[in-house]
Image (cartoon, rainbow, N blue to C red; front, side, top):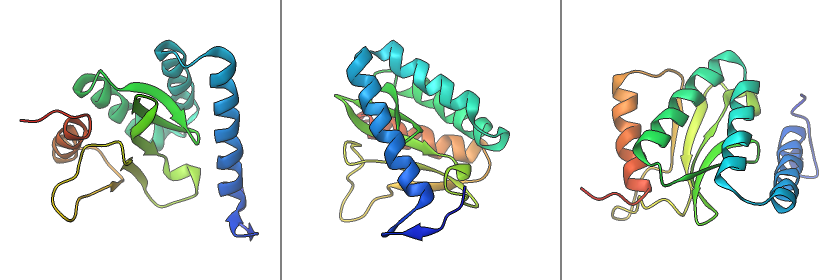
Length: 147
């Protein structure tokens, strides 16, 4: 998809906003159940290009292991995980906006506040032990776990 901009938003950004509106309509129609959210995330994961899918699946597996209390859902077409309906963390595929890297982000519902500065997003191009260790701790903390 072209990334040409008109009226301040790129075509990709407008498509993401339309996708979010469709997600909200679908949630309203079928209900906001955990099973429906998981089905939506599974579908999104299956539709991703291989490089994004491998990273997104690893992140999905990590979140469901480390913070099973977070509810899977889609958010602007991204696999996301929420509490009380508010997104805590999400995976943004590189392919979504033709970026050179995917990213893992944390929203305001994430309990990451640590002094006057804290990380809210990580760029990711590969998954290794150090990535997993960093994300495991970030997700645990974001979900409210305290050591």
